Image (cartoon, rainbow, N blue to C red; front, side, top):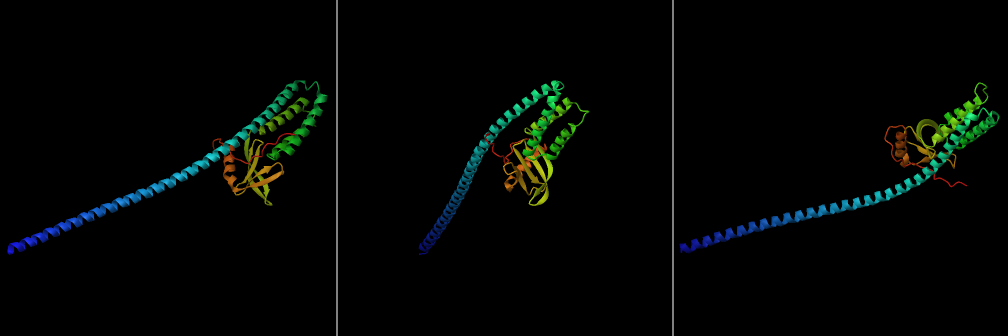
Length: 262
């Protein structure tokens, strides 16, 4: 009887131990399943984040490619315009060289050369008047000096002619140079100190010294036109290049489209 009771107790103990082990195995299996699920969810989240970043990069790449094409077209247009300007400058310099060669004969044709000087001065004054208003004080003073020298008997006609040719060369050089200087302009009804940026004769812009206002000279309106804030950094970059404060680079500036000559 006692032997049967002992066997029943042992059987119960073994059954309990087996159940305990089965419970532990199931618990461990459940833990492993949860870990696998969590790992899968983490990978899914990472994949979604990666896909979002890829989509963003694709959009940015398309925007950059579109902007690159636009800038290339802009550069091509400028190259065509600059090529035309170079031809004009070349012709002007050719004329200057021819006139320089004729200086040696000035003493022989003095009576004819003096009227030519006056016509050249008239043309130069008209050109400065119609040109973009850059360095006006300097250019007007040069013209005034040339006018005054025409009345001086101590200056030979050949020297007067040379001075006028020199003024033509200076005006021609403005078309192939970049310059930055300070000026006072009347903006919004008040005088403001500004930095002037001149890029050849194709662009003339201003920016107040506090960089809050920017604009450009519109030849068709014969006046200064304000620009929005998107040009602020571009003009500031151009000013730094003109002052040799940074390396030369492509400048994106408002340029009036060239018109076909009539």
